[in-house]
Length: 194
Image 1 (cartoon, one colour):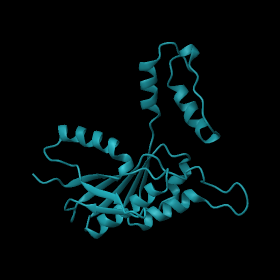
Image 2: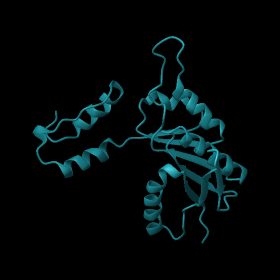
Image 3: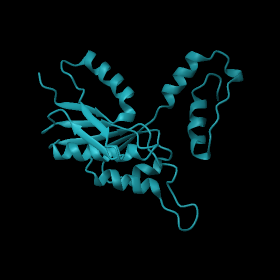
Image 4: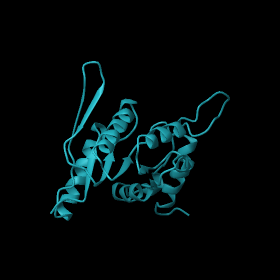
């Protein structure tokens, strides 16, 4: 049976993609793992070659966009290669969306870099974007294609409950104001919180 969709990975998200593919192999009667040959030329340029036939297929690409910025460029090159290979629908899954903290102007003459990143990713030709725990919910509105922001707070809460037994001495902190709401939400899932 031929697979109706394929999952590809940029180099920085390969371990996560391998785990996803391993799980799906145990559940599906076909292999969903796409193969990419990605390498750098001696001058640093990124070269990508899609190894699978993707004509008319839905494809998913996992790749964080930062750091370094080469990860964003690699994602864009992969998307372009998939488009040119006639993939029907391209969904990018971005575990870490770089430049998300620059989601608004705080001073004059500053860019809104998160919006720029959304424009660049969209212009590459993606049909849908999935991110994980965006720095700010407003970033979803920066995209003109369907965009989902997956939340992991419940997963973290369940793992913390497994790893810790004394919740009276547990401290949940945020590195910045943007993460304070997530830290507060995580606290609400802890035993004894009100």
